[in-house]
Length: 81
Image (cartoon, rainbow, N blue to C red; front, side, top):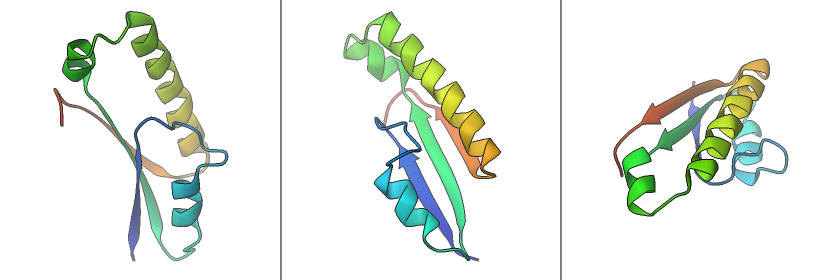
């Protein structure tokens, strides 16, 4: 069974997400959603704590929505990439 990886980076929407829509066109494939958070990199680029909190809240909502649609999701935390 093929697997389509959808790497969520800045666009954390399910609606109107072109990459997710393309992955879902193949009914025989699994869809795996990936998000990699990089807190050290965010600090190096002076991300405001408010923005980091907003991203965290959006990720929680995204994970819940993906699970409701039975997509597998993998959220990782790395220093940078």
